[in-house]
Image 1 (cartoon, rainbow, N blue to C red):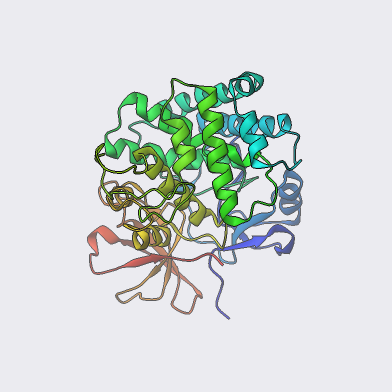
Image 2: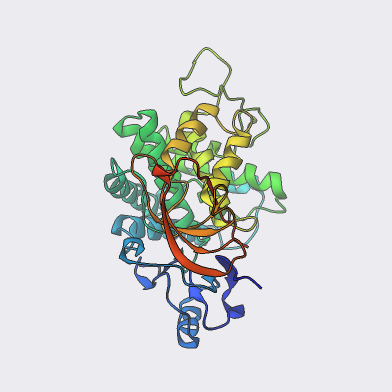
Length: 386
């Protein structure tokens, strides 16, 4: 039987001896174990004690070197994730924890008094947004390998990843400094409405409630910020009018026409793409997809769900094959072989340097390095984790 490729497994089902496929990072951004480490009983028990539930593993260690070692998460990323998590837990506590209430009761709570009662936790997120933006602006897309955090699906980590993608897309659109800062603040707080426990929501109603409540809360917190609340309000709107909560119809353009019927704001459309991309690559509703697969999903819905012009921009900004990810060779003499991304070409991110380490039968083979920029006839595709 051939060796398995990168696979996401429940930690309590992992057999010692397999290799960690993605760096394990704690809540403070510190790397606990790097990719390529052989997992022992001690390592597994330590990670379990830290709170990890799943790990990405391989049965065969691919060729690894310092070029794909992960660096600690930037302090701005860690601080923003912690600020978002604190704001979420504070709002939830102020509302009685998990006690369910009618939507009308929650809407009545979203007032200037409520904003004052939050004691600055929302402002702390806004401040962290400024620091995060200062760290990210002009820096391009991160090229470190994808890491796995203790709480992979936590509201803080998800929100920061969405904000980071929003920065790339906002810069591509030419947003001004003030709009960028409000976009990032809104992205960090786009799911704050999920802190409200609403009676019997149902799938569609849950979207309506958390977008509406997030909008009303953020609007009450800062009347001078006209953009951030709309990120929370509109990140589930679609171009064809089938989105929620208001069923707005988009124009599939970057420019706004104020004489036309209401359309989603540009920041709402940016957040919709960044949010769904993160859900696809982290596997919120299913097994996680490789970034190039996730991009193809977005392209398939461009024009109907997502702003078509923005999807084209987003595809140019995202690194489709991150460092340390597995890819399948789809053409040429090595067709069917598995390789790992060793380096990214900054001029052409879809043509990375890869190293083949599994043959077409998924058995280990001698490493073969390929520079896809100089091998134009070779195509690759990300390996789905499963």
